[in-house]
Amino acid sequence: MPKSRRAKIVSLTKVAKKTREQKGAMMQEVQANADKWKYCWLFEVGSMRNAHLKTVRRLWKDSARIFFGRAAVMAKALGTTPAEEHRLGLHKLSKQIKGQVGIMFTDTEPQEVIDWFDDFKQPDFARAGNIASRTIILPAGPVMRHHSDPPEPFPHNEEPQLRKLGLSTTMNKGVPTLQVPHKLCEKGKALTAEQTQLLKLIGERMVTFRVGLLARWDSPTGEVVQHSGNAISIEEKGDEGGDGSDDEGHMSE
Image 1 (spheres, rainbow, N blue to C red):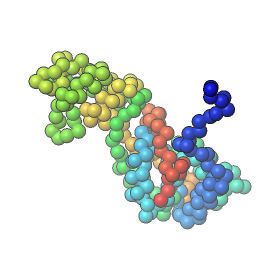
Image 2: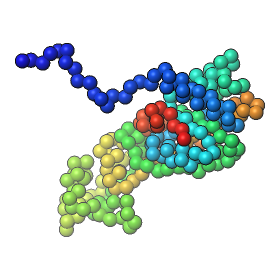
Image 3: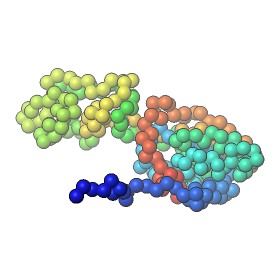
Image 4: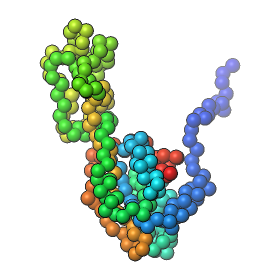
């Protein structure tokens, strides 16, 4: 007997959309922190990696409160017009909350915040579509992995994978070997999936996770100060990857 056309398989892994109550609770949480802290920073992220963003949260958990994602909800919580703003001047910051950005409430003085984020950089592996920041040429001879110090050659059982990813290797005394140099990637050109896999296998980190500060709201005056000293480039923004949301859309303690 043929299956009924009415029979449908529903995936239990599908994530339900946030309810109005959940969004309302998040707005209240944002507003409560706006009442509590002296400063509110607007920031963006380059070469987005959720693990590194969680590190930022952990390092600031005792002196700040961070929200990331759900830009429309955060903007509405702060208020987008003078009549709607939760506190004086917040609408000037709220109007800038667009796209993949976050806000951080803190009492830490601005220069200390600026210096901290200027120093916080985490190298990581590139993803397909990223722009190569440098040219990598693998020399003739054994294909080396740089995860260890000193580098060591790939084991024989990984030679088929290296060939599948585009390397013309041969076995020499049980070691995958290149007879001629191989240009793995070229600076300024987009990386393919095969190139990024090779870069990861050999241990070359091509991108850097970092946080760019955009603007700061000061509660005592209600003024918003623009900041572009460590702006994120278009190439870095292209690596957001959509994995930055933590706790279904916001990142907090």
